[in-house]
Each structure stands twice: as C-alpha cells, then as structure tokens.
Length: 253
Image (cartoon, rainbow, N blue to C red; front, side, top):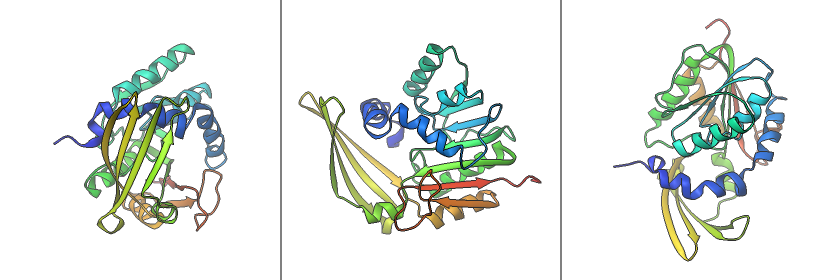
C-alpha cells in the first residue's frame, strides 16, 4: 500500500495552496531573517534544507552565499527548485531522497526542517530515524531548526472543517480534520474543487507537543534543545503561533 506522501498527484494538486495561499516566497525571505536572529546563519555556512520543496528557502539561502543541499522526495518540487536556481544563475545540490534514508556524516553546519515537514510516517521510529540522520549529518556545534504546528496549537484552535479559496478564486480547498489515537495524530481529508471536479486525499500526520519534540531530539543525541512559539523567539506557551525547536549537537561529539 502506498503512503499518502508518495502520491505525486497530491503534491501537484495542492502545490498552489501550499506555496501561495499558506506560504509565499516573500514569507520565506522573512522567515530566514527571523531564523538568522536565532542561530548563526552566515555566508559560507553549509546548510541542509530537509524537505526543501520547490526551493522557497533554498534559493534565498544560496543568494546569501551559503552552500545548500536540498533534499525532497517529490521530483516535481525539485524541478521547480532547479528552475528557480537556473533563472538566477545560482547553484545548489538537489537530491531526491526519502528523509528516512538521507544521511551525510558531519557535513552540515545547519539543518532546516520547516513548514510542518515532519511526522508523515506511520511509525514513530521512522521520525526518530530522521532525527538521528540529521544528528549524524551535522558537524559538532551544528544546529537544527524545526518549525511546525504543535499539538497545543491544534487543540487550542481546532476546527473540524475549514474552507480555503485559492488566491485567484478558481479553486477551493476543503480541509476536514479528525483527532486519532488519543491525539497521536490528525487525520485530514483534503478536497480540492476545481472546474466543478473534486480531488480528495487522506493525509495522516503525527502531532508533537513541545515536550514530545524535545524528548525526540534528545533521543536522537542532541544535548541542548530550545523551544519557541514562533520564529521570532517568543515563548512556547498558551499564545504560541507555531512549535519551533532549535537543537544543538555538542562540539565534542
């Protein structure tokens, strides 16, 4: 049986919602500015963009003179990233691979895992494997920045059904949500209506609370973990917008 995230038609159908309605290129630039106030993100750094998609963060990172490796399993998105790089005469390494398998020992100063690109797998051990891979791929003193919708925000703002019109009004996305297994995850039914036709996809994502994500990062080997409620470094409390975790690999490891 094929997992939902292996369905290329899902990523194609939802592409415009993901990268225009929910997150734009302009927002990506702004997000990097905020991240740079939380961690060293300087020219010459080697950066792993894990789940890079069409290169929203990857391209501006390369513009800032960083050596960037983008990893994603969706060829359509990697092709978009190549087009963006080529249009600006920029270069980066792009790899089509499952994040459970990608590992490059002691190669990166920074790893980014943004826009809820985590928790896709049915088994928690697979999530743990991803974090162990990142830990192994970072140099001593390297850091990972993770940004996602936390379990606390989902519970606080929960809605069973949300309608999203597209930016140009030619399609509509209906999101339907159901909590599963005592909040182990969220089962989403996403229906895109375009030209009178419907495409429906079932998406199940493992949800993490702040303490659960912190524990997972410690299990992977990270010594220091900081939690924030946004990329602005606000507290992770009842007013948190997102779950942001920054974890560091000890310099002597």
